[in-house]
Amino acid sequence: MAYNRVRMKVFRRLGLCLLLAISVFGWQSGVKKLYVDGFTTKAGAEKLRDDMIAELRKLSSVSLVSDEASADFVLDGGGEVWVKGYRSFSPRSELRLPSNGTPIYGGFLSVELKNKEGVTLWSDLVTPESPSADISKDLSKRVVKHLALAISRPEAPPADPRSQANVSLHGAGATFPYPVYSKWFTNYDAENPGMHIAYDPVGSEAGVRELIAGSVDFGGSDSPDAIREIAPAEQDKYLFFPSVVGAVVPIVNLPGVPDSISFTPEALAGIYLGKITKWNDPILKQANRGVRLPDLDIVVIHRSDGSGTSYAWTSYLSKANAEWKAKVGAGLEPKWPAGKGANGNEGVAAEVKERGGSIGYVEFIYALQNHLSYGKVRNMNGEFVEASLESIGTAVDQSMDVSDDLTVSLADAPGAGSYPIASFTWLVVPAHVTDDAKRSAMNAFLKWMMGPGQRQAAALGYLPLSKDVLAKEEGAISKIH
Image (cartoon, rainbow, N blue to C red; front, side, top):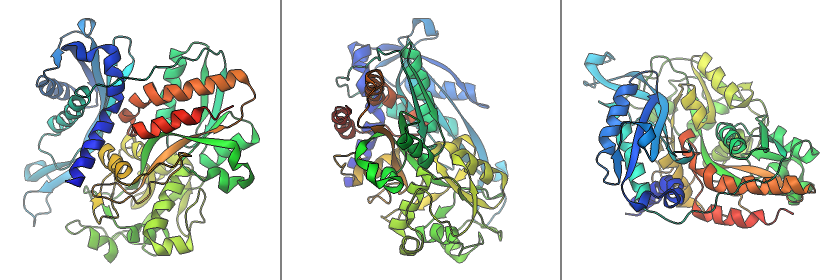
């Protein structure tokens, strides 16, 4: 029963962004006209659109129309789904032909609901729950389920702030949130003429160092301890504002193995300590019964730059494995006992994609966009859980008591269904900004991030912030002086 209550909280979180918008745009005033645009997928776009329409017809609050001009709202999206292999109908058969099994899918579907002005009111991202006999129908059902829950629970939205300043802001830092930051800054610039925000995804450590040096206006970090690690004497001079919640996933390149690999913390620590060197090691085989793991060397890839993604990864290993904590610990730039370094989430993804037998770690969306298999990770409850918006949300809702300074670790969260390598990512802002125009512009953007920005996050695989976090964050803006 407790787990079901948490799942409902998570579904409400996924609907929160639309809840904050629908009363403004009048959804609850009657049945609204909805147009389903084409989906930008490489294959199966027409069937996906047809399946989405079929599911939407079941909603009494929606009237589907055949042209965009007559619609109140537009639903569109994109993504890609591919077959990783086939699960045989016979447990003794190794055949992986279409006629001998059920497809095992990889991929994702990202959707956005927009008004006539093109403003995103709600977004979502779903991934295949393999194996599946009809992946298009399965993905459509899940998206519409989330949408239906969202539009059934209206509440008053906050005002959408507009920047009045003609000013530019420059930030630098984490690559973990770069996909959503890139989208946010582009959209915010478009909505606020005369305003420009630039962001360099150079890694958490490099970005925070630039912030401390005064060469950028704000930083991006996935570590709440970034200032303390780099410049302890400066930590009281900066405020941390959570932007979204994401997840770090173990990515693997194992040719001929379509199944998701399950990892215990002992296995991940052993691999990154250099103690487990073969994919068919007994520790890996024990967690992956029924999967034919190859007699293949493990190629370990880690970040070469100071990284908040590394901080999230090593925080989990430190909490879940005593040997890792004793020998390496958690940090932005740990002393790696084994492996090859790569720069940024993009660099790690590229290395793993090119090297058979490799393993790395990246933010969730980088795995999806690079068509990489990502593993399940054993959580504190003893379950092997795959990253998704639902499992990330469960980790947040089951375990978190947000501190007043808005910095808290979500690593190895307890509770059924929680994904154990979830993390906030933060914008780091000086508490004292001498330039009045920049201070006003920063405040306006932070308020926009808490409203319209949150509604755009899920489509890129990030979980929107909860109402409790947003309320604390709004109060913290007043500390910028």
